[in-house]
Length: 196
Image (cartoon, rainbow, N blue to C red; front, side):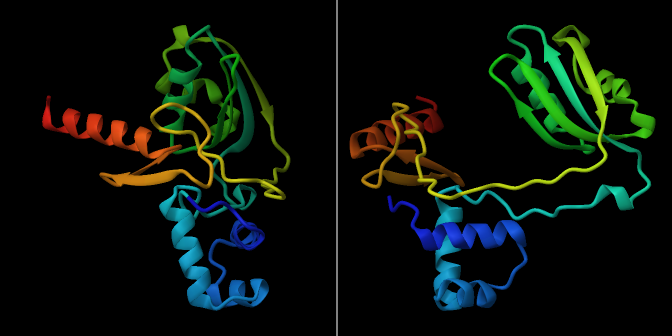
């Protein structure tokens, strides 16, 4: 598996600024041809680093409620359930799960009424308490300076290096640290598919 180089990082940075930026414009910035940029973006999508191209909406220009930041303190062991339930809510924009079973998310709620959102999506027994703060502004940025590609092996959990391998099975990409892990995983995957 090929790692990230400075050109990959610059392409990612330019796409994070504007996901609709034409490849020809990116090519000029990174001194490549547009087809070479397209190939690199395809490779980054194939390995799963680029998951999707999204739209960033300025909610302050819409009359659909109040933007709030919510911190939910879940009961021990319930954080993942709360996080997954909230991920399916249309008005939840960003959601984060911490190791101590806290879920932090942004949402737009009518008159800041987060209780209705929580009551309709989350088992109330999974929530110890929650805090709501009205947002006046928000910015999102991601920094890639010096970041290296380091997925976990789908078989053993070790970090996959540039010597690792990737396999696409039924539309999902799996990364492996070695050929042995890949073979074991694929064999077990096929056996489960065949019902053995």
